Length: 593
Image (cartoon, rainbow, N blue to C red; front, side, top):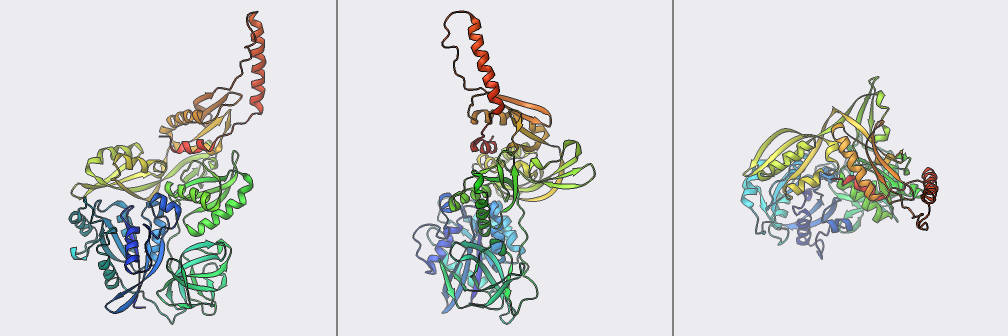
């Protein structure tokens, strides 16, 4: 056990975690690196150049004549995937904190660092990309010293591109990170930190052995669900899975036991022996709190059950999705899904399409509100259609977040304006170093859900970094804005919005829908309503045949008669006609600005 080291790599987006992981794997001769980011094995990750899933891999390293086993976990950097990071941290004793030499410390660097410190991890600071012409290693060293309070000599300078400093990193991992602590003679306790679905072998759980030993063929049980299984195969994770006879305390590996039902495996659960169970489960990590809710509906109603199965399989691989069944008048049966943010929602939609061939419609995302009625009862509402009658509501509270933005001083003005437009309140601002400033805002979560992050990136030319956590619920003047087509409300397009923005938002929504809904044989009235009051209206004119073309000359009453006949037909058609809202229209609402 004293020769095992478990560590993860944490950093802000694009600071070179996966590239550095490639160099470590190459240096320890674990694999031949044929292309960049070997651990990002999903097509989506390759295309977007981001890490979505944490990846665990085992390396063997020899130092001073002794062999060490290093278990590395490469983690995502985006704020939407911070749950992946928290799970990886729970399975490690140390972390490499990677900071880009050209960009310095950013918001996600700080939030991931705090997460690691809470778990008492040993931190090894690394400055990456020192080979770049625009690198400022000395300034970045000052920032890291201010942040962690370490010595300058503790900071390793490296480059994921050229491989400089890689050996120093491996040495530091062996010398500074403590080996796992545990008791091999105690009852088995293993923490599940991830799982995947394999269509031939069932569900494969990844775990870290905290106490005891697990062998192939053992009878094991999952502590929280109480289900019992045979350990058909246990082993370690290299680029592929490598079976082993046994895994001892401190090892990280996988277990295959032919589990078919995805509800039986919970990330954060404890594996123990049936014959000699442990007293209590390992203190896992906190339950995930979804930030953004959206309805996901199959385009073909017959696919409802397939969609449920697909979401369950996806939930194994990404434990931060939550979903509950719901139905909508316009879209039929579907699920209300909770995501950690907009990028997360987009990725889930893409994965459903690519991995499970599911065509889905996603409704406008929103957040959860607390509604208090006149009797003093409170109810959590995720969906505008779940609101009680207006006369019954006493007040509504919405979630507020504490946002941290780190940026160059040149962009303070536009960023302040953006946050204040989104009903933000400035809490404080601090100068981090030189020309970098850290701004704290209290803002409503509902305002940042849709396009805040994109706008922040564009006004700061990509230099502002953003991180947030939910702080509290506050009373707010919210109204429900309904969209009516020919007098019928389309529940998938209704939103909860602040009273001051409602009228403007309704008008813009009607104009956008007018462009996107195709013309029909009859007039379509698009209206935005708050309660019974119509605040905006647009009309899509009908497609008409020129019925008076055959009349040339003669009395005007002949034309009148033909037009009246046409008008009656249009009126009858309007009563039985229904309006198809294309998927583009639902998505356009997200991108209104």
